Image (cartoon, rainbow, N blue to C red; front, side):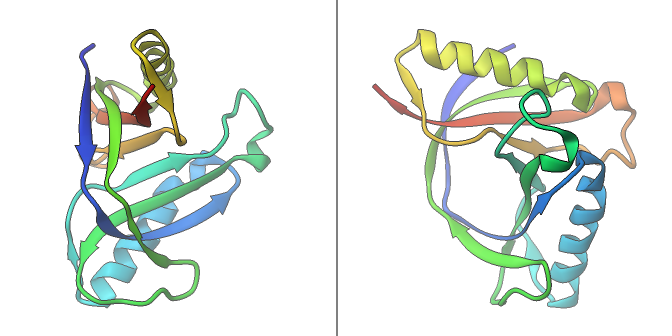
Length: 152
């Protein structure tokens, strides 16, 4: 697995912050895509999730995460969908191929790499979903994992 340092550009996103099971991720993504389409906005990249805690730390019903999708155009939030601009960020990134259940191992490897190479992790992990799970076999899914970092 290759770990690289890169910058994520500033981007405008539609997002939903959610508390509960990860099983709701597809529903939340669908809601965000529906919002973007209904507003006539242009999708500017794949959806991603920001995970504020872990199923290893809290019960499933206490998981807190955000599902987001970058877009271009003017919009204000509606219902559960909010709008924000995320700042440019320095990240450590790794691309993983396989089922989502293996993403945790990659996050661990990123954290270890940060620790051993003079980085401070300054935010929660981000998973960008490159492949569509409705069209891609689980073993072929491509996910990019990132940690926001700064050099020590």
